Image (cartoon, rainbow, N blue to C red; front, side, top):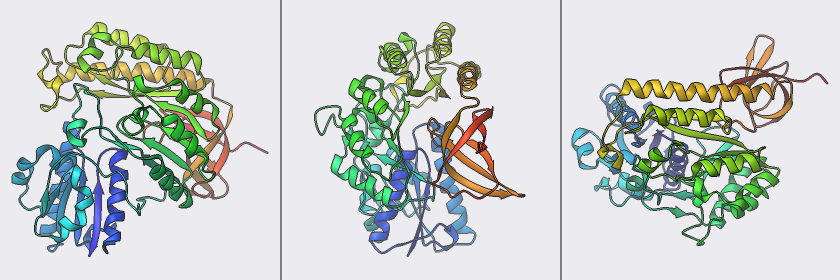
Length: 437
């Protein structure tokens, strides 16, 4: 049988879908990227916010339409966070689906497909590893998921409900997988989890991400290691030193702070010392580029809170920042709070935050103009007599921080590192040239 997976949501879901492909292949399934050729289609869903749920349901409807209009023998399965969240209501809404698999049952996927019992939505969890991971792209980077679940109780977040308690993977298993990725040609390893900096707290009774990074940095084929989703309170001095000192660890940390106003952080159930943590990193490790994310329009947020946040942004701690409008979720604690902000006002506040952060980016970029820096090539396409190269600098994470674009008279293979001279920017994309020799 041929199986195909549609993956939705964050990089953590991408990794999980690649594990699922590996498990299916081990059990004798053929893997196909063409849904029209597949016997089995799996939608691996996200349900973190309302827009993600809508996207997941749209994908389910599209597969049902495909089955009705051309692939009548296609069996459709829905996996991951959406069935874990909605359970019986999703099953009632989509009776045409052949099976549902929750987050804690993903390792049973082949058996569920083959058996008569085609609904398994039990305990929340996640698929943390597989013997043979199948990469879903030819890009020179891959994500390494070091843990599953979360022990924090952020009032706006339902991840613990969807994914269970924090569960670190062993260093041995991570190093083995990382070496396998390196052997497959991966040049950049991006460390992810719901909370990367709590790594080891459950397994080794200590925050040991610094030790894991040291070991990963010894894999000679990996030229870049990047850290995403760092929780402020578990960023240790040892971790910062390792990032600062190790040559092949990107001087880059993604630290989602969500806000800076203490009243709002309190309502969010986020660390109240966030400001001090960020200021300390900026002062002591100025070469480390910080990125973050903010929530605009959280319940009870005032214009004074927004001003405090934009003033903090203007201090220049972050080179990049994603901004999300607060999305009410009836399963979250924040949905019970009084004084919710109307969508129009949330959108206006989102724009204020985005504009403040973009001004910081432009200011920082001015200092980069004219510098020669190294990029990792991700795409090469011919245009006339030239080749248009899409690449990323060390401080650009895939999908979220823009790209570096330049022309080359010759094709440059994906995965190569090239020196370029930074020239200008268009939004968050950077334009560069190959320097004259």
